[in-house]
Image 1 (cartoon, rainbow, N blue to C red):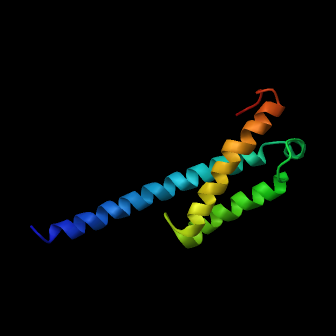
Image 2 (tube, rainbow, N blue to C red):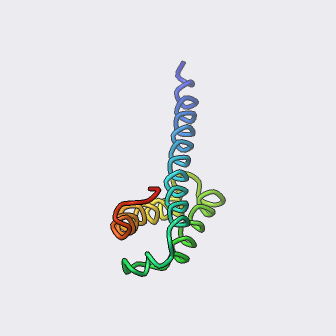
Image 3 (cartoon, helix red, strand yellow):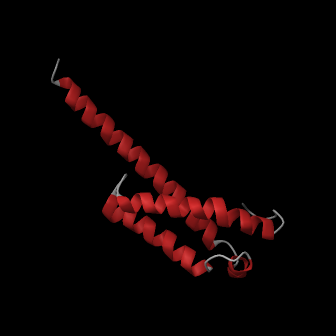
Length: 104
């Protein structure tokens, strides 16, 4: 009975890491898809990085999260931060620029 705790612990940690990885990839993918569906001149109008730079940052972060870092690696955390900066700062600016009309 005493030896079942480490096995249970390892399974829980594995499932939590998988859940964090999936959520991380979903947030990063949503940011990348939104970035790719926007017009390029809108990024210059709100005074942020160009569309190509945001797309490259988000795509590289997704690839590094998948290939290198895993669920809670440094590249995964950087990817989440970049996606959240895009979604919470750039996306509202683009939405205000288009008067709130659009797909997202």
